[in-house]
Every structure is written in C-alpha cells, then in structure tokens.
Length: 230
Image 1: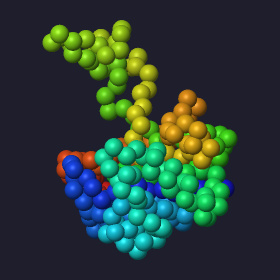
Image 2 (image 1 turned 90 degrees about the horizontal axis):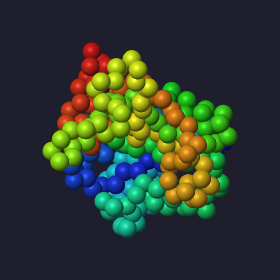
Image 3 (image 1 turned 180 degrees about the vertical axis):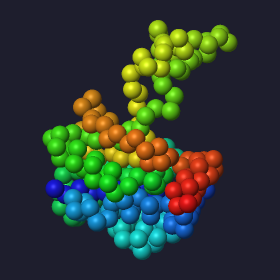
C-alpha cells in the first residue's frame, strides 16, 4: 500500500501569525506532524504544501518533500483543504506514480502520535479503503446545547436539554482535525474528506485533539507539553 501524507502549511495566519513555524517544545509546529508520518512503512512520502519559502526550508530539513510553492490562488483564506489536497494529489500521481490513499495531517494538531497514525492506516486497510476521519469525545454534548430565539433559550435538539440524565446520553464525538485518510478516487469524486460511509478513528486522549488556532490554544498546547514532561 502506498499512502501520501500531506501537510498543509501556508504562511498567512491572521489569528496566530507565523503559527506553523512557531516553536512548540523547541520544535517548529509543522515538524510535529512531519515526525508523526515519517518512518511509517505504508507512507511513501510526506509532502508539505506551502506558499512560504521559510516553511518550505524547515520542512525540507525535517525530512519532508516540498516540490513547489503553492499557487497564490490556493494560499488565500478562502482556499479549501480539499482544493489544496487535490492540487498536491494530481501533481504527485502525475510525477511519482499512483497511490492508494491521501493522508491529510494538519499541523495545528501537533500531539497526534505515530501509534494513532498507524491505527488510522490499519482501519483504512481493514475496511476496504473507506475514508477514515479522526474524532474525539465532544466537549459539549449536543443534547446539552441550546439556541437563542427571541432572547429565549431552547434546546438545540428537540426533546433534549438539561433534564436528560448524563447516563442516558449516547456517546457524542466531534471531528478533531487531526487525521483524514481517503482514497484518491473518493476525494476526486466527492471533493470532500467526508462521506456517509467514513470510518471513525477514535482518539480518546484529549491531548491529541488539541487544535491550535488562537493564542489561548497555543498556551494550552505549551502547558500540555510541559506537563507531560514533568
């Protein structure tokens, strides 16, 4: 099996400038995701898609391939992960040969570990190459969520609310952004990493689902890093 690991890391970030190369535990953020993929037998290459020469240089030194700088139209705030992935997929298969799966590892979830990556690949293999998506227990159960209408709270889900006992609630999971694995055919047909038949990669460790998007998220990640090494 040949799987291309794709790490998307553009230079611009309004809420947390320079986050992809900011040092977390002495290591640039995107390198955490590179390290989570390099050395896994099924992964034929780790490709970093970026528009930033500094990011490209760091990625190359960390062992990833950066065959080009991303086109400007794919480096905007409105460019989707799917369009960036399809650009990388088309280039790779045209120049390096066909692959069985494309694995998107976003650099903003640095604590995803190699064991989790291997588990996700195994699920992909064992389930006929159906899409695999990383999920974690939902921080707020949807049955406990409300909407505001006419300045009044009402359950977001009809029949739900705080009167439902916690023991009676079904487990709820949220996509955590840490792992997306899909067959090229499925990505091209749906232009999405999501489908009705996707397989959940359950990531129960809350550290693995930390998604860094703001300064507060960064502070949480640093706290987790230092706590784990006490």
